[in-house]
Length: 200
Image (cartoon, rainbow, N blue to C red; front, top):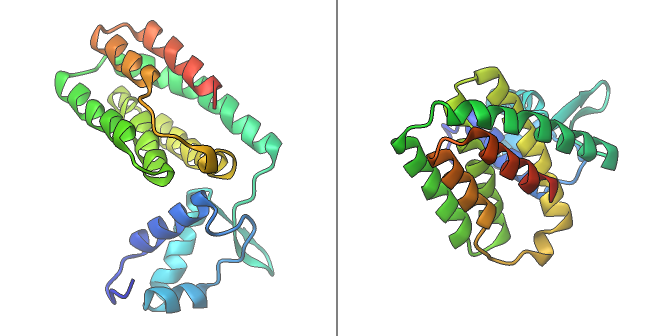
């Protein structure tokens, strides 16, 4: 990437996906000089990009060691899973109460993107977007931002454990969730989502 006007957010997004996919190893040092050289930018946007990664919880600042890519233990992943199981069904119940036909159409597009994905990287990004889109109608910014962070952290487990064995398939749970949302059955949709997440 060689755009001299590249923004810190764009740099952070590229690095975030690399961290999530495991292209940047857990605990690896994220050097400001290296980032500036790679993206052909000054140290200012490189530094701001690192700050964004820390805010996204995908990197950690360690005194005297600099910024490092996040590192999660199995216990951390279990905690992330439990938090998602607690927060996402809650948000979905609230979302169903405010759902609109236009929002359902948008969600269907992300569902289809999952089903039509040709590779695990494309599928994971579409799947993550689908799981966020179905919650957006709840209109609870603080709740949604926390869930978004948890989904990013959770995505790392997919790439570490299941990417190599991934197979393209149609997700019946995604269909069932949208059908329950269309019927405005919040409890049903949340039950399906909780079961779906428990498999992860």
